[in-house]
Image (cartoon, rainbow, N blue to C red; front, side, top):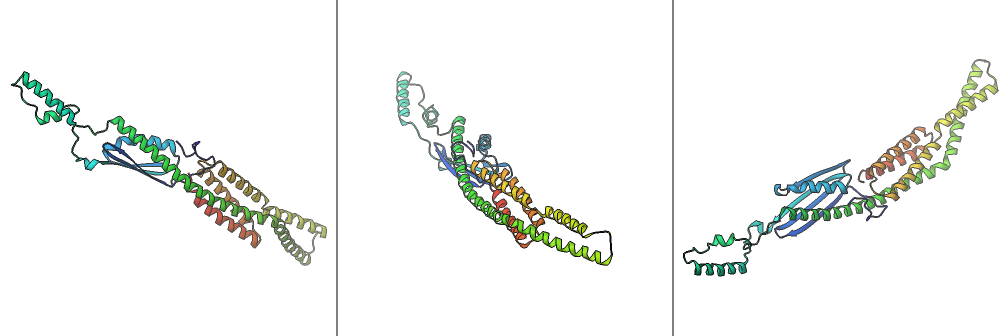
Length: 311
């Protein structure tokens, strides 16, 4: 059994938060298993059980390791004995009657033989019903209990994972829209920036020409202005960042579609998204570009917080 087992939807995603509570009635009493799981970078298992049930820990550990990959998992196992273990044992009266007939026959043949004592009768094999469980029976009951609990826990984690998936999808669509609105404005951002740089450099060169005659010609100045404008425009061009963001969005959608254990992968991509958003901000030379970077970073942080909950 595993979170991405074939009986689950191929696109299912799983939260690390889940809960299961199952019980199994045995002839010795009621076995109760409670499993809670919360977020953790790795698979962290903790067991709470009485010493007489400690033999279940290796079995439980093996099954949980096979089923889950991440999360802090706490298992609580208890055994509610029948009437606190103080119930009157059941006696096979039919067998007692047969023993009484046997005793009567012996007394006829050997009158000097003592009668059976009550303790002799109770200790006779089969007279008192044995309500205890053998080690094999207990192991089988515990294995069945854990299987049922894990199925319930995984279903719980899957339900919450699907809710997280919907939230994450909304965040991604918000990021996509920000980038989509930003792309048509890139030429305008560049044009405005180039014009601003051109004006500043032209003013600087005019002042140099006025204050001190030099060997520079008007053509030289124009060429220098064009070179500087081109150089600065390349430095602030955000097309590469936009392309990388769109590539990350496509990869995230692919991961959503594939499902399974995706938390670490999405966490890595979130770091890449944040890096591109920071670069957008550092290259910003307009209010619209700065605001787009801020809005992106807000959504990315919200996305990251939710990703931390995924297995």
